[in-house]
Length: 376
Image 1: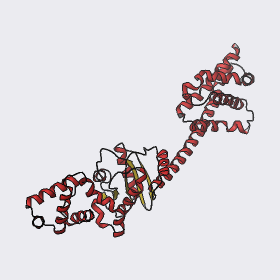
Image 2: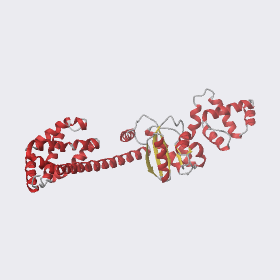
Image 3: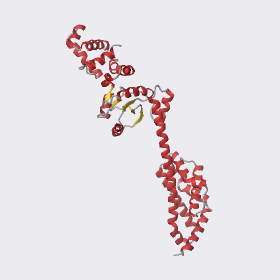
Image 4: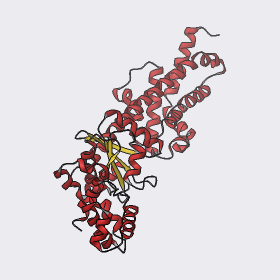
């Protein structure tokens, strides 16, 4: 084994020679990674990769030779890590590419060394690996810091977009921009639901994840609103409420809407959620709203009755029968007033209930139907 002091001296000589060929090292590095194709899918351009490779070897050799580094070179690892994060390079690909610096430097040292230098290289290979590993770690920290900042920025942008959608009457331009930020289809339909309790947020999020459904949430005016795509699992608001809000004080909007109309659903959901009723819908909790609130949500309430009847040939006959029945609550009285058989009234009631899903067995349901049909 060579004398340690002599070995250190010879190691410094080899490093000085290595520092003199940094352009060659950069070229060899680019060849080893196939011009970036091996790890980067061609995202960084050739000029970017050449500059980064040249600065990487200048940084490494500066550290190995214990030379003072310029402020620009000191900042290089974090900056290139942040750049690769913005370029969308996977961290594992970036780390694997960086560690090729060791192989390139080691191969060059073997070419520069004499046969008598093998023991010197063996004594210092650990130092070379440590410097490269520290360099890779600094790049990773820069990458992760940038990804965190990007995530924070994305989260802020998402919340701003949700706030725009849930605010009164967003313009088509605002809705289109929100769809772009959130990665949503502007022409698709969406559910809006809401909860008021903090622990309910995690419950709803967990349940939606279990169904493989992603939702965006936004808290305003004391209610956390969820925006999620329409799903065949939930043909109506009752199905969604039963699936996702079971045992949870919260509410679902009466129907799915386009993004531009999400603010209308949000208004309804806020009113209902603040009633603190478990898994509720407008259909079941309308009577607990104030007159002013009912005026706001009346079109949604009416749609429960009107929409299913719209395509029925005998709509007008059903409407007339339901209004008369709702007025008295008596099948016999209704039959007498309409000059028809009692069974005819029962058949019409059954047909109405099947179409709308509204049972007329309670005075509250009868009042709702009467309220919704009187303007017809």
